[in-house]
Length: 76
Picture 1 (cartoon, rainbow, N blue to C red):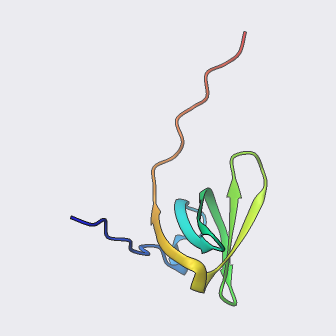
Picture 2: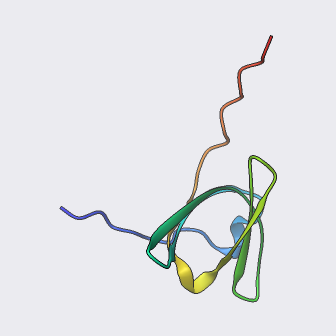
């Protein structure tokens, strides 16, 4: 049975944590983070390290809302 890839996020999900998979030359790239905006066909996702990934809507092959990240363990 093959996996089914679906885009299950909308512009209404701005502010939610999402996971994405997009088509790039030579394969796919994933990004997980907060969907900051979705304007003029471009999604902006802020990753945990603070970087922002811009994803052209047509490149998306899968995306969904995911739960908040678990807290990181504190370093002593």
